[in-house]
Image (cartoon, rainbow, N blue to C red; front, side, top):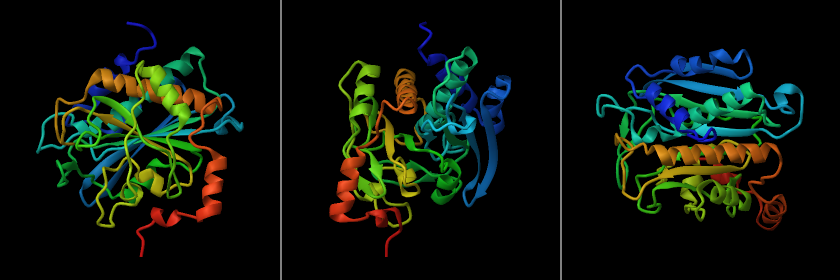
Length: 315
């Protein structure tokens, strides 16, 4: 297997989360041999639906914030309700894709650092691990719920130093992205849905060897949960809690797959998704990848004003 392929990381992480005993400590332990080259932490948080373990990984860049530099920081958030839905389902669920990709990316970056391949800027990876998350009714198929509310998830997964965010989420339970693999969203910033990043489209094409795939967003999708509006899923919820640009990275399927489905974590597609996030992180911290045009965004605000009201629950 070629060294730059990430199937080893994917299978390692899948084995860790495909267990009723999966928890944050077991994830953080995989970075203990790094001798401080990466910083991994976990905390257990209880909510109305149970408890979950939040995991955060800081990978310092050679010229990043953690080393006193000013290279940009990229955030990668693995979005999900839970990696398992026991006792309703046995095994890792479709919804686990966000955590799978985020943690696998962390494994690869740690390996790169140990070999001397250090990105210029910091990478901050965050997600959470729960093997018995609740199930939530949704159209057209049921979602995975979460033990904690969305505000708690945003508070713990978003870091104020993230200059841009990739939000990874299994997005298979719908009828609007029906192609197996992964797709990216238009960039969302402070209530505006901007055009898809040309740089990210280019990177996606290079990584997959195919034409890039995007998915549509509605205004409802970029508003906070709790307003009684339909959302495609939680993939753009980070955009409700930060001024930084956010791009959704959706793992997708040709069939409509419920979040509670098991046996539906497609390894080759997860590998490609992780590789895309890695290449995007490289280029963003090298300042050769823009998530949006600052000039166009400023012109929108000049013409139409702030759209930050869409980051709130409204009237």
